Length: 176
Length: 171
Image (tube, rainbow over the protein chains, first blue to last red):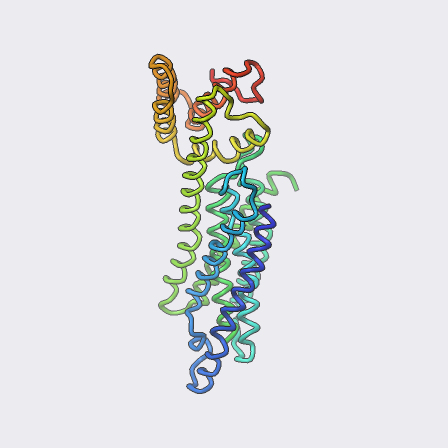
């Protein structure tokens, strides 16, 4: 159920992001051309705000989706519903892709250092985070193992949020 | 790679990823926006997680209280099926663990006070709660687990002694 909810919210997040890009980018492109402003300024929405918005959309969409998919007999909200880092890492990849591709004609570019940091962030995050949660995120003294608050939820979510904000800011710069 | 190697790799990779992400935020935000961007990332990660944990705990304990109260009044076990057992271990006990010993103590004192039990029985149960909660030799986790398991297995013993599904009676 947990994975089903994540996939669902990941797809919906991608759609929400594309909608946001479509809403803001075309008119901003025109504004950028006619006023000679940079595309980054012309995005119309602060890229930091956009990254936080994507993260909040993930959380806000996920809770009702999880609840709607759940049987009436069980608890309505469980600790596993708070595992948002998966959605945020997916959203980061989609966010970077959508922002960079939608603004590619503006010839924005990342420095070599930024590209290196972006690759390290994604590759190490995608390998390290799931392994960290599997190794330290569960209290195995109980059967079945229980998800820990700190190493199972809070720390992975913090790292996921860093990856999301970093990727969206890079996407906005790459876009121009 | 051994288990220790996997754990060391997991911690190192995650830490490096977090450091790279922070570097990326600082490098791409530029100028005076660096602090704001970093604060946004911290707020996005921390605030919903802390609020979510509080909400899940509140809801889990409210449902547990409702179910336990009905079961105790009817002399039934709170844990009757494998699903109840899983729920106790994955949701209820971690929620009490997050809440702490004092809140666990207050929760059960309040629950016992609200039950239709004899005064003697109430005093006996409250004495048990206070004794476990104030025992300096017990670790925090053990105190919480003993109190919670006492009340989930107590009801079971009333109905059918000796068939506890693996829930240890408090020592």
